[in-house]
Length: 361
Image 1: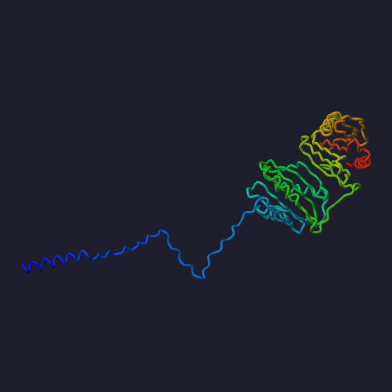
Image 2 (image 1 turned 180 degrees about the vertical axis):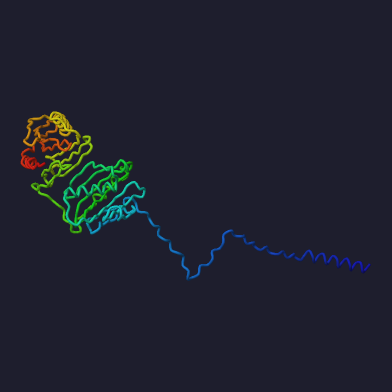
């Protein structure tokens, strides 16, 4: 009994001890979340980040750069984005430089050709036209031909075969024949007209010592009609324009005074077979009315000693009067007219008489 009592006491003591001693609970440790972003590697102290590189900007159509022709003959401004090509083979002894628009629908072209001795005005025009046809099309036709104040000639032209139109400026200087052309494919005139005009207007030959040509009112130059039908003396300061469209199969060349109040006009028309005197007069009068006014009236009609006829006329509508001389030769009908605005007769009577009297066939 005593042993049993002692055993019970021991058990009760053990249980009491177990209940009074706190249980040690392990402290939860925070779990590091896995990062989906890699930590950047440390940059070595001697390795600096690369500097951003500048981005090359494409030149726009409106950006222009300076161009200087060989031998400093002249300068122009050309579009910076246009590609340049040089050709020394197409035309013997000539350098041809071509600047072409990115889309290929417009171009600017410069030709320089050493000629040694000076060229006559007629030969200069003939050689230039030959070069133009070799470059722009054998069917090239000239719409207008104007002599500028500085001695250059300006030709407006088109080619149906190449569907191209343009303007060419030509002259001679320092024993060179040179020209430059601005042109476009026919469907793209509106896209390039303004830019090509800016290029043309940038022409300069003064910065490098070239001297422009200026004429006084009394200076005269020799004019040779197509097919060398006849010659005249024309005031050098008057501007020239050529028209191949107004009258079929005809060339009409007009020289106009600086103030626009007087003119000399030449028409040449291929007629093939010979014409009777009556038919010749009828055709001439029809052409004159188409050029000078449908109300044109003939004041006098005189046959000259050399076979030409001389018509004095006037047009009330155009307030213009003049004298026309006409004839036929080498299967051509031709005439030339000296005319003036009515209120300026006194200013131009003398010089127009000098032109008329200079006729030689």
